[in-house]
Image: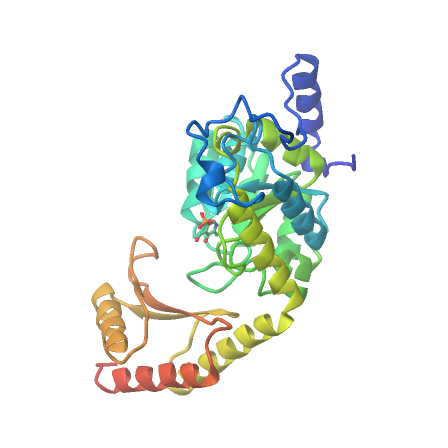
Length: 372
Ligand SMILES: Cc1ncc(COP(=O)(O)O)c(C=O)c1O
């Protein structure tokens, strides 16, 4: 077992304590053999019939009980290796991952420093932990340092996304790592919208910055086209979550069907780098096209937000674009702060250059009949 990062080393002792009390749960080999399981919740024996292939069954129970399947470990090892992490653990969704991990790691006397625009799953996980939560202005490293400087009794956790999906921006991860190290805080980074697209080979903004977070969250429901999520880090971390993340322990294991789909999506993203290149080229083209119309899209990368301000204007512009054949939704508060309703375009590898041209022309036409 490799060494845990300093911020998580306390978990080694906590796991030893569980072990000494006979309460440690370890991974078992996937249930196999001729005898049907006697601890599955697949009460009607339907899982095998719903999709009758060896890999394609419901897990039937939590992985701690009888839900462990070979595909779980295969997918976990693949993503961990890809990210240069020691281990990874699957969750049924990114929401379940954030809620489970934050409530399992942070204790009541801890401090969680959270970016003001963090995803609802991070907010809910922080609330569930009962730790003191300090919400800092978006991307404000000085405010994070300030929050960490104040006296505290327990541990400190700095939680951020690497690429914010409504604003297409992200923190200076090297600076964040430095601040965390200087104050003995753990760094938790949710790479949900970055993985598969940003960074070298799509390995995300932490790899790009050469930063090793203590905890990294990724999802399979976005660039990898499937569903589910994972937490990557040291082996102590995943052993702790295996024992204490309630959304993992008390929930049916990820369906092998979905784990298989996630693995295929993940492998495709690696084997077909042209997909990522196309996505980024479309994004660049759309950013250029909108800029030429006098719209300055915020941020960088494959998400292209056009902040229009008032919710009714966002609704009107979206509906006029849809009338012109552009499938787009308006994003309004509370998904974004008041006064920043927007249209959020995303570039994908399925779009052609002429699709992007059509969007730019439609925006131009809508602008022509809009009061600026
Ligand atoms: C940053 C972030 N984390 C987690 C999630 C939740 O992921 P999932 O849709 O897999 O529950 C999202 C979803 O949009 C997200 O934006």
